[in-house]
Image (tube, rainbow, N blue to C red; front, top):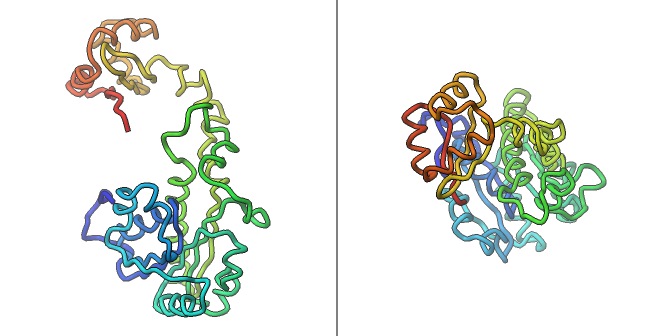
Length: 285
């Protein structure tokens, strides 16, 4: 996983031990973020492995780099005993299974707390409370939140990736709580709620069709070039003024459409960099 900004020698979670049972995407991304912050992460997978490895091996390998990978069959007593041994030295447990499955394994919140009161716990779930056992994935959470534009599939897995960042934040919060009180904390990350929160800009009209950041402002949009497209984000007055001055236009959308078609997108990006303007060529994922 790419190193985050900041001093790479300053790792705030150095010495923290994390055990994660979370597979698919939000859990592995959160585990990678915690590892990047300095935590030692033990990733426990079922005998069949993490489904993410089968779906996208390169991404999986990037996310688990530097972690301790352990395969355990938690449906068997020996596997559960090995897990509890790992948890003896851990500061944080991260899960993403449905509550009913965790309860069957004796890994629900109350069971873990009664056995290891100093262990912090973050659970990634789809829905809160009694609805936590409902099946779902990023696509269904985005569908419920209103962030999809059918029939196009989403390029960014909003609920999963934002959920991973929230799980990282909640992990840091419960670790801080434990350091202050000596007792492990518990937090839930609800992916359906995360998707809804990520959709608030659209719900309030900011990115709804025709909204200020969805076509309402000529200085913030995507324009076709002679080859490719450019993304223009001249929101601040000084950017806007420099953009229209540099292009020699009045600033209508029609002006921009006609002008940007005269050169390739890559050339417009170089032109913008020379002037300190937020204009870049649109690239494929």
